[in-house]
Image (cartoon, rainbow over all chains, first blue to last red; front, side, top):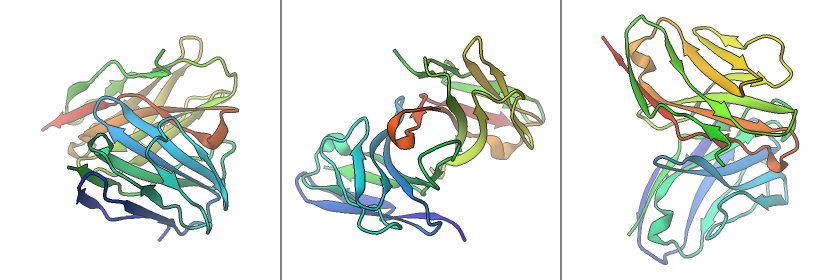
Length: 114
Length: 116
């Protein structure tokens, strides 16, 4: 089954404790992206990757890191989480970054930073 | 200025009736795409329908249709014959033609509750 998976689905952590949210897709998509969703703000892009070893900042990259060592994986790293990073996070992928390719979203990761 | 505006934070609709969800957008790029996503209470984002700026016809996908009025910069979603399972948040999103990274810019969403 074609899908985007994220782990963990739910995470409670404390300020400053490094964490990683994994994202994996099995569709051989070139493009992957991370979004965060906050009430009333819709989804905002954090980082994106057009292909392996190619990543760039989205609208709200502060406090986050990403890497794209393999085509299928695009982990999101919070080196020193803070309470304002409490949010619902989505990973998405699409065949490429051009044209009308729609993005397919993972199931989301709910993060609470205390 | 907001690039995507959804003015209806929430609405009720009677089962089996049609509902229109408003979306207006702002771009100076002649090439763009408009998307609608559904987010049920379980949280996942489900792609519903796409409209390209150069498409001559309004997009349709089953019970979903997009009322695209380019001059007004609106892309309203119409759900016909509403079902209880249509209760969810609905997001309008736009991708601009040459914007780096295929970024989707989302509106704030409209919550729909279908009444039996």
